[in-house]
Image 1: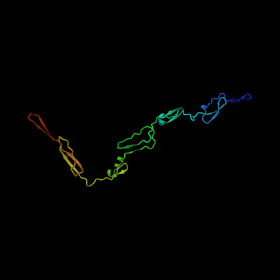
Image 2 (image 1 turned 180 degrees about the vertical axis):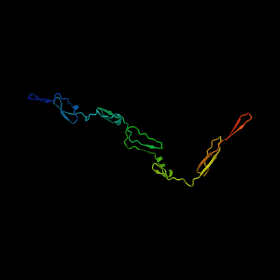
Image 3 (image 1 turned 135 degrees about the vertical axis):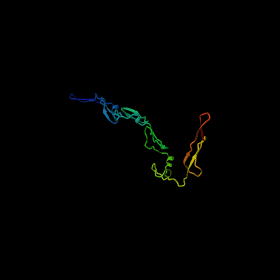
Image 4 (image 1 turned 135 degrees about the horizontal axis):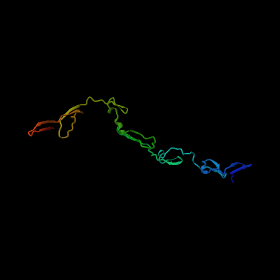
Length: 192
């Protein structure tokens, strides 16, 4: 039989009868006496008061749980793991998705595009992404100027065989002639 109250010479030395400690309120690993005087071992796993915590479900990884504001919270933050993306054009923009990233993802220039950034493909004196160009026009390159006359059919104007490029194409104006006619009006002749 446990003793829960001790009175000596009319003076109360110990009185557990009003105590409110119970196993579920006492932390695991601790012992005490309940109001009946029996020794009890704590079963409460809580080790902190989380009522002032600020974490929300969106800030906890999906599939994980935590305690905040005295309640268990299940995470909703998406686990993106290693996010990787290749940039394929100068105007490419990669938007990083919301959520968790494990830190091993990369965003880099696509290998096909990277292979094009060599000194021989870049004009001498121009630096592109850290690669200094060394390309200079060859003295063997030939240019040609051409003149074309408008036509009623589609025309493709190209350099002659053995010529590298057109330096200029001049399009002659369309012939336009006005003359008086026998009816008292004006005849407009447009020649192609």
